[in-house]
Every structure is written in structure tokens, then in C-alpha cells.
Image (cartoon, rainbow, N blue to C red; front, side, top):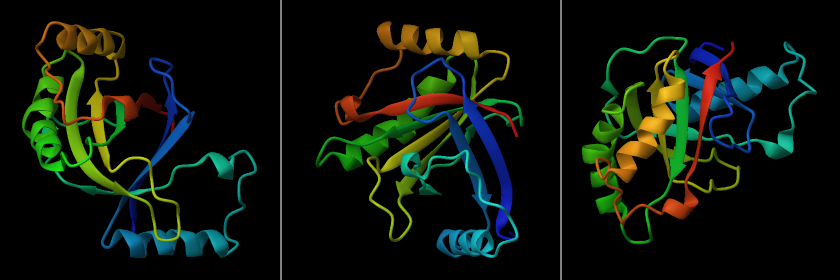
Length: 182
């Protein structure tokens, strides 16, 4: 599909529970809705055989638009991706976004193993149910340092080096690390 610049399949690492075993991340060119339509039309064209291994009732499909610059060093195709879905508490969007972009991304990148991060606004495609979350953060963890990244993250939080904003709805967070497999 011409509007798909990159596609990567990941599998959950087991370092955090997840309701999804796999995550496919696509980088799209141009208008994301037009790209999604192009992908759907290609799927309907009969040029590919639909998989029977995937459970269509247990999928989350969304469009993510960058709302922050990518921070940190250059990525590596074998790095682990930590996918974090979150929301602000009602009425606290401005403080949540200020804290997350201006403080939290940098705090996480101080933890050994974390190498890059970027935030996105997350939305369901037209006709799909609204997602549980409005925001998505993708963190890259060095492929050989995953086992130290999570203990470091928890230690930084407990030591007060990573303050959590009261604007964050901590009960609604969903996160899991995924290792690339294809």
C-alpha cells in the first residue's frame, strides 16, 4: 500500500500484563484517514488472504497523531517499544499535557535503558468505537536493557525523581512493552 511507509509487528515481552499479545505499528504518509482507507481497500481487493489467527473482536485500531517532538537518541529497529495509553482526570487536560510533555518524557529518559519517547493524540477511525484513551506515548527501550529499565522506572518513581502529576488518571493507564518480531 503506497501510503504505508513502515510496518512492524511486535510481541509482548511479559514484563507487564497486557490484554494484547501483539502490536502492529504502521507509519503512514499523508492524511491518516486516507491512508487507512487505502489499507482497507487493499484488504478487500482479494490480493491478500485474511488471517484466521487473529481475533477481530479483541483488536484496538486507532490513529495516533504526534503531539510532541521525538525526544532522546536515535532509534534502533530491534529496540523494545513500551506502549502507554493514558487519560487526564476530567477537566485537567492542559496540566496533564504540560506535565507529560515538559516533565515526564525527560524524567523517563533519565532511567537507564530508555532511549527515546514521543507522545500522540489517539483516536478511533471513523465508524469504530471511541477508544478508552485519548493519549498514547511510545517509549523506546534499548533492546539489551529491558531487564533494568522497569526496575529503574519503579525505583525513580519511589525515590521521588519522577513525580506523577495529579492531573493523570493513574487508574486508567494501560501499558506494555513489545519486542519487534517482523
